[in-house]
Length: 564
Image 1 (cartoon, rainbow, N blue to C red):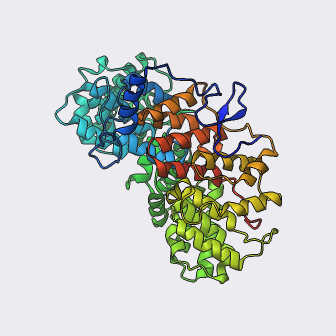
Image 2 (image 1 turned 90 degrees about the horizontal axis):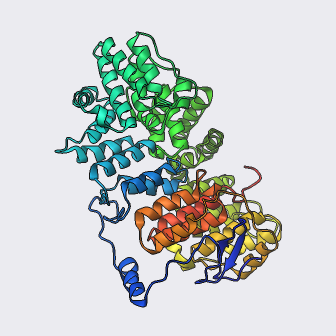
Image 3 (image 1 turned 30 degrees about the vertical axis):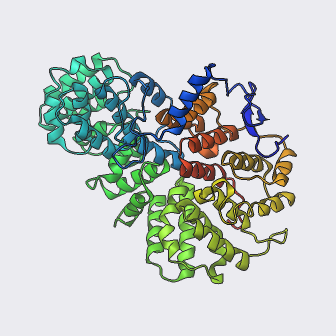
């Protein structure tokens, strides 16, 4: 059964959804907090929920005490449970702001906390941000941990002389570093020895690395090969770091397909951004990076514009179509090129980023009946780019130029509902026209054109955003079983998320939202996980991110024209 408006979803021990009235805890994932006295409760409410947090001075718009009360060990454990970079574009952008921001280090030593942030940035492919954090932390510091990370960063970015200079200072202290950082220090000094022609020194560092008995170190095999004067090969199943790649580059290149397939996020970012990398490798790495939210649409567009990009047939085709879009002046032909490029991008797994690259060319097109067939594509582009007025303009064209829908309404009116959900100005359904667009969905559902599982998901999202859900939609959804597919976090995570967001524990809330949504992004999350994540973001003051996450959770399954 679906609830009356204002009721929210719970999860029972068997994973099925139940509904509750606000203020009641009926599901196992919303345990009661320990009892407190009235005075304690009032004090906690004032401290946590009424006082505005002190904001960081780095322009991130985030609280300065973002990690307050979170020890380095707890942060490390939380990060280890995440899939990085986050597959949700909205959460990825938020994660970038959070992990790169100039915030308090919380409890524990500042060097350890900085090291954790740098490692998280590296795992997220944010190598420039990691270098910036280290540059600030290293000023006046001789901490061996930060020295090792700085040397690794400098060599990864191609600043060999600077990296090797720092690396020499690690020779006497590297044995006291944590084992994974010891391994990096040995790779650094092995690389530097090989780079200056000291094969014996490189072989010695490779031998010391093997004594650490750490599994999965591709760099040690590559360092051994380079020390022996042999062109290294990528070990089967290995994941290559940016440092591994620099070592291998001392003795020629690596196979492009194997290189990109084996690259870590940091290496993908390094290959895509480094002008010294050959154009075909840069573009292949750039597309792989775009697929996991490492590079922006603007960066990908620059790679497509590079002359002689080369690569495999698919990459060449997409680059050619992209450049045809930018050159074409005739509206009809431009629209056809945009649609062809997006079709290729969908097959390559980079559809969302590709939609954003087409924002500029689509702005050049006026909604005209001649290209009425393009209206739905233009709507998708404008949704992905955050241009909600553009969505509304093109939806009107679709209504006037397209074929009528079976229920007699405008065929693209349901996209207006998605624009209202995505638009933060429609908070709580109060924006102009908010809620009216849901009538088209009701009509589609009555005519069997709206998937019942998607209807459940839509109701969950609307409720989480505090947008009014028309009673007919509740009724229509209640006629089918609630879907049980999608990612759900471990038991206890949803209650931790609710508690952290209520207490205004900003950093912990973001970490828990990432765990709740899971490794496949908003589209792959269970509808309860999606709804609770949206609520938590709203409580934390992240209204825009909540709406964007709601859009992502619905976008992939939203009804589209048969022609596409």
